Amino acid sequence: YGALDKPEILYVPNGWSESQYLAQLAEQTLLAQRAGVGGAALSTPTRTEVTREQASFSGKGQVASAGVFGIFFLTLFLSGQAVGTMAEERSNKVIEILAAAIPLESVFFGKLIAMFAVAVLFIAFWATLIVNGAKLLPDGAMRMFAEASPAVGPVAFPLLFIAYFTMAYMLLGAVFLSLGAQTNTQRELQMLSLPITFVQMGMFGLALAATASPGSWIAFAAEAFPFSSPFAMIGRAGNSPLIWPHLVALGWQALWVAITVTIGARLFRRGVLKSGSPPFWKRKRPAIDTTVN
Image (cartoon, rainbow, N blue to C red):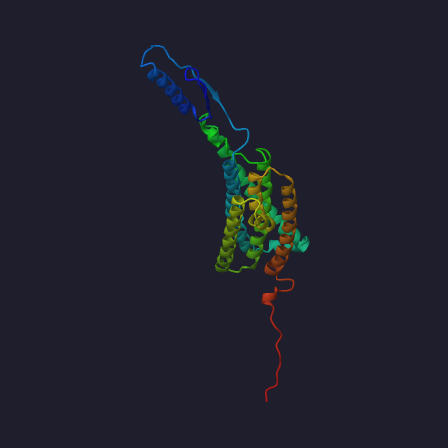
């Protein structure tokens, strides 16, 4: 804007070449008006770099989708190892000794915590490599991500990501441990783990649909259902700046973690220790004696 001899040019961090084009456009326009007369520069532009104070709507959506995909990928890759671990330990007598010494719920929850610690160590290793690799990029390389900022802020979003990943891992890990305790062969293990993987993909698709339609009934259903709630709520963190819904969601998910661990421990007792009442689908109906004439 402004006069051609002293134009005011505003440009974004990656728009220096566009500002140069506008400056030359003003210069050539003045030359054309004066029929090419004049040796010195006729236009003296003033360039001002501008940045966004808040992330754009599309930038928030990108962060929300990236958060959903990140939790889905990590839980799919890491929690599935619990099935094979439990299937291998069914033949180990040490777990029976532990179950005789302490409550079985403590054994089950301890295994879940141990596997989560291994997952955290794996994530910390790769996160360190990624952060150090980002330092090797050129100075202006990260400016393209300036618009991709979460609605809750750059500090709260990583904390919520860690909290929701913990809840998602605990929920799915307890389910996988319970399934692993019911298998006897690798064939049964594969038959049980594949449907759970499909369920995970369904929760991922539901969370992405909720992220694309914030405030809709799909978003409410995805946030309320316990197994899709961690995925949907991290998407909400990217789209909405409110914090109190996350406190409610974390309490709701923690309740379902306790319920899942309790149910998983009972299935663990039946599958590994062969104690307790059998599940209803394995109970045999009493025989009925009939007199045949």
